[in-house]
Length: 260
Image (tube, rainbow, N blue to C red):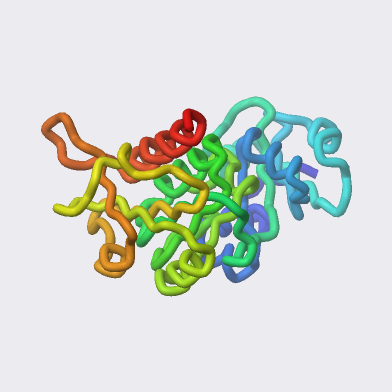
């Protein structure tokens, strides 16, 4: 049966998952977009619910992709599906998955990226995507209210959060972890002591720390970093979007390892 009413309880529940409060209460999140969905499924995440419209894809096509399993399929009219979806394109559908989280103990060997007080979900999503593209498997987020399953993070990460570990923790616990692992802490900060990021030594035992665009890094990291690094600016502006800064510095890290 195809659901056509905007007052239908199943449709209204799907709509409510756009709110962080509902996602956290029920321990689930809603995601669309074939690259993201395909990666989640290939990574072993089984959707609890699938919403689709035959205007874009047939149920049989979805079953061929994920199997029947225990997934509940909800057929929506085109109007209802379009109201839930950002991507009204052929082959798209919407999946509802159980939320998940990672702890410091789940982090893998290798370089780390820490983001303090990240404000914009889109920036975090873009950074996760960059980290995955460059082979960085560990991201820590401290003192941030951002919800990992915010739709903007899911869209901008393109599913990268299924391929790496993203841990939400405190500055104090993150620093303790870095020290225990013997990681050198390099903080991106504008100060008289900062050096050109290209002059920093490159190794796997390093944690790159970035602050928010609005306030930069807190005194905590300025005090506890082993070295402050900076991207020299050649034009009239004095700063970059944090996701761009992360990409530039991590690219140097990867290229430096390759050339060493």
